[in-house]
Image (cartoon, rainbow, N blue to C red; front, side, top):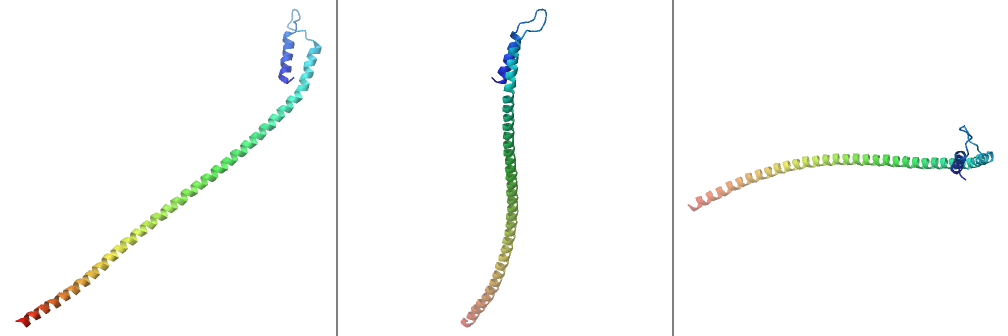
Length: 149
């Protein structure tokens, strides 16, 4: 019998035993009482062994849970660092891209200004050459007029 059954039997022995007249005492069989005490003594070590086993199992489960929790925490910290690192890399890349874009815009403005200046210079020389050609053409026409008259 297990401990609960023995204690239930001992309780039943006390409750069902006859009362002594004019008292709150009961008449219990010594042999029955000692049988329950012996049973409790025998069952107690088994119950203690089971309790010890349960405590060891609890400690093992707690250790496993603690290891799992520490592993999860380490993974979470690692992931947080990775995300932080990724965010920092992204921020640096965005800053670099913005800098490159600004530089490209400045270079484009400089190229446009240079192209405009060059075009103006070429057109100015062309205008001079055309004016000179016009002067030559005018002189040639004048010369033709003089020869024809």
